[in-house]
Amino acid sequence: MTLSAEIMSIGDELTSGQRLDTNSQYLSQRLSDLGIQVRYHTTIGDELADNVDAFRIAAKRVDVVIATGGLGPTADDLTREAISEAFGLALELRPEALAHIESLFAMRKRPMPERNRVQAMFPETSRIIPNPHGTAPGIDVELTPNSPQTKRHCRIFALPGVPAEMMEMLDATVLPRLVEEMGAGASRWRYHSLKVFGIGESDVEQRLP
Image (cartoon, rainbow, N blue to C red):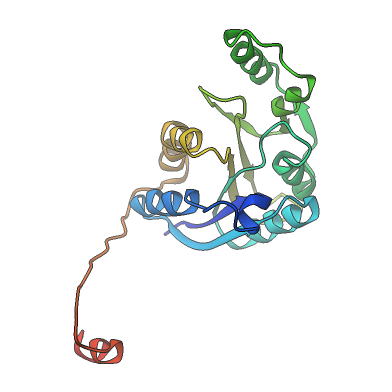
């Protein structure tokens, strides 16, 4: 069975056009390499209700959701809260995540702001996606047919919006889990490019068969 996926990009800087969303392109390419069909791209601003709705909709229509953005320490970083509210999963402090964040500040010889503790809060039952070089660990949530909001199986991965951190976490943790735990990679998508000139697209369509 071919796995289906939705990519969610979160942040007012994206919906306002201030930043170009390159994460979605990269994620689509990497998922396609594993034979996962990306069916939707969704971009949402920093509104909690909108994020809750988007996660619930995505979980009902695809097998894999990968979200980027909204894992920082500021008040408008709402991804963890959105996942918690969307699926009725209480947030809990993970000491190992907090220790990692504290160690990063200690290495930089800077005091850790109290607000950064929120980055160690995870929805219950979720797993940590390590972030070796940043203070925003990722979130891995598995929903099952017993989950009240979905009634089906879906895997949600939330990653930072910083491209370098997102790419490292995707390659080191997310893709291996998709292969080992969800059977991704058994089939592959292949693409061919055909370059033509001096002919309209309707004529190309007629000749291709």
